[in-house]
Image 1: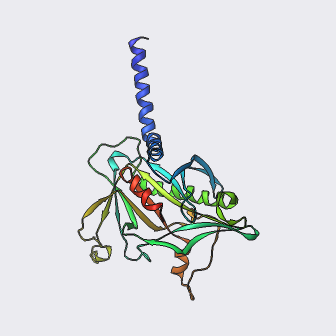
Image 2: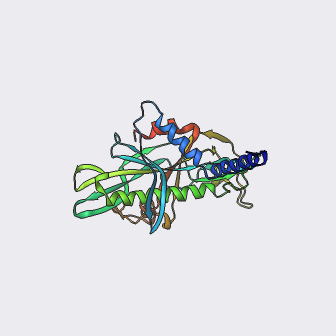
Image 3: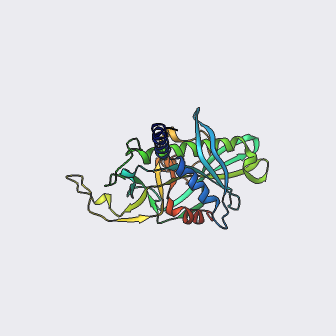
Length: 287
């Protein structure tokens, strides 16, 4: 092969490698390999590149993990996001008005007698955490970025994609109850947790937003601490909610609008850095 041909092939190979990096395929399969090689784990890779349908549109889940020892049965719907090196720092802060800010619960998909398919939060299936935040933003740093890499909307895009995948999976499970677990064919259930695995560095701020200056709107000074993983708890938009019926009315005698919002729209997503994979999966497996 002539030198010019070898140079052309080398250039093409380098361009292809950059393309794979930009789309994050290497990171996705590196995460899968890491999880499969974890010692004494109770997590198993159940599916990779799983196609699901959500609101009439085809989408896919990068991979699904299953923990058969959890009760109810627990699955992770994973989205892998390689952060643009120029926007590799994702910063998060708490909002002061999020109801039950430190309380977390996951949706339970349930198939019941008569073919009733529901999904919702169950009041007895909850826990507390000091890792809960409500707003997150990729912040530009000093590193050189990918020319075609993800933008400042990378975090929002990843959240939207993982919610589409997780909700599509819940609808699929409700239509295939043998994939759920229960005491009989007419009472089967399982949980689904949306998780974003990322190469981004995760930072938590202690800024108190309610202490912002009323005249200028400027927030007070604060500090950042680095986290390996965290919970993002938000009101999701109506177009990202699944079509399954709510499991029940709000569990209070005289429900308010806030109670219905909590039932229908307040959801949690785990954001996990590459350094936090082991500790996160170890923490959540017992929930």
